[in-house]
Structure formats: C-alpha cells, structure tokens
Length: 422
Image (cartoon, rainbow, N blue to C red; front, top):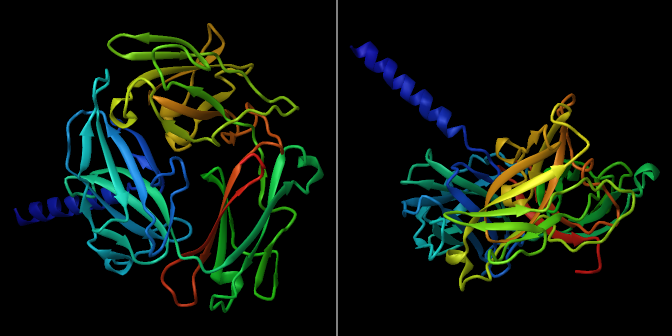
C-alpha cells in the first residue's frame, strides 16, 4: 500500500512538472475562448510595450472571455534573459511589493450577439512594480494556479544607459537592392562598465515587432573607442515585404472597404472580397498599420464592451494547390502564429484557399505566408512580394550583462521607420 501511494505521488509530481513546462515564453493564448488580447502603452493603442524603469509609464492589457461569466484571474511577471529564457531569479529580486495580484477590472458586454466579459489591467500598479530593467513575461492564470495558464505577453522595461544611432538603407547586396532593407547602427556604451563588449552586450532587431523574424547580434562588426559599429554587409538585411492587406469592420450595418457581404442573424458573418497574389515587380503604395489591429466600433459608444464579434471569411485565389503547400494568415491579431488555427483550407472545386476567423469589430492588417510541402519552410514574400520602398517599423533593443551578473538588462531601445510619412 505504501509503495502504491509512493508511485501515485511520483506520478503527480511528474505531471505537475510537465504542466509547468508547457508555458511558452512568447505572446500566447492558451484557451480558445480568450480573444482580442492587446498590450500597449497606456493611451497609445498599438504601441510597442516598452516602459521606462522607475517612471510613471504604464502598459494596458485588455482581453475578452467569451464564456460570458466572470472568473478569478491572477497575474504575475517573470524576468527573462535577452533570448526569452527565464532568468531563474526569485520574484523578490525583480518585483517590488507583491509577487502576484488579482485581476479586478472587468465588465460585461452590452447588446452584442456574442456575449463576453472584457478584462483590463494597468501595469505597473501599486501591487506589481518591476524593480530591474529587462524582458518580462506577463502571465495571466485562473484561480491563483499558474498551471491554469490563460495567456502570456512579452513586455520590456528599459533602463536607458546607452546611446543609439541608426539608419535604414537599401540592401548592400546588389541582387537584393530592390527587395531588402538594411539596418546599420551604432551603440555608444561609455556609461557602462564593459570589460568585454563582444560578450557583455547584445542587440536584437525586429521588423514590425515580429519576434519570429528578428535578428540577434552577438558581435559588432568592429569597435571604435566606446562605440560598437554594426554595419557588416551581410547582417541585419531584412526583406522589405509589402504593405499589409487590411479590412475595416468598425460597422456591421453596411459594407465597407474590402467587405463583400454582411449577414446578421444569431451570429454576425462577414464575407471579404477574394485576395490574390501580390508578387508584382513594381511597388504600389497603400497605407497600412504595420501588421497591427485596432478594436473599434462606430455602431456603439464604447468598443471595449459594445463592439461585437463576427465570423470573418477570407479566400485566396492562387495558382498554387493544396498538394504543393499550405497558406497561413498572420498578423498581430493572432500573434503572427502559423498553426492549425491560422491555416487556410484548399477547395479543389474553386481552386481557392479559405479560412474563417472569429474577430472583434475593428480595423485589421494581415498577410499570407506560403509553406512549401517539400521544404516545410515559411516564405513570407512569395505571395505578398517584397520591395525596398515598403514602409516598416523596426524595434532596436540593446541588452547588457556584466561579468558575474545573473541577468540581462535592457539598456537601450529605439523605434526606427524607413519612411518620412510618419
């Protein structure tokens, strides 16, 4: 009997450890009923979630729970290194006040076909305050149990200690000059105690806040005094891509741009106009939001609670077939993830790819990614095209870890844009 209980205890411990290892240190939603998750600077919708250490800056997290019943949600922060692994610090080393807190701000939807509960959280607050600079993973979980994870979001706390100088140019590779954008930059680290700049400082560059295609720079091209120069011909060279596709469903009363038909019954259904490949050699300007989405409604007064949800149908007419590969739809609205929920289905009868997504009213940017059936590698430009003229945001981050230190600090951040229209 004792042996049987001991085996059950070991099994329980193993299952618990396995459950804890399932957390992904990225922007993730772990439950299908959780929708419209957004994290940005308070008062600046769609902004990159970076705040200054020991400042009055705050971030706003918002999301909807489609179960339409309030639940006990808690949250905490975990400090991470430059590559988004846990820093393995005690929460008391990187948090002031408490180490976790209850999410108290919620309200029910009003006059919507899809019922939901809307939650909001402002960080830092009087209960949760980051104590050191760096990467942080925000974790929301149910009933105070971190094994019941609901969602995670990456955020950045900046302790500015370096100077940053950067520019964006066409690729220095002649073959890529018409399609790529190259980021050259310098880091002035005179204010830091750096013993080995090749080891103590790393930089990370993202295009439109997409971590999946970001580039980590572990070594500069060369060092000049207390300046690190990053301008090697072959590094930090990004495909410019194309301006994002977009659609507007701020109203469900009449058809708007890119909307073909709207049905309003027990649920809302929106049929978008068909999409086509855009791999043309010439660039055509279109205003976009660099892959972001914004919840908004002109049908009500407060989009947080009276914006409705709709089943949005996308179709893509391609010369490719389902046997040749798969097409995925990506954007900030689904955290740029390519999985079963973002994969289009191919219909032999119409020779088109289709997908249906449940989305809240607003304005959405999106793009299509091709994954070849043979190589299984994502191609971000085959269906969309790529041009050096395309307007893009770039987020440049600088991390510093002194000798014998146990964590990486975020000591520099700069937002770059290759266009003069912003």
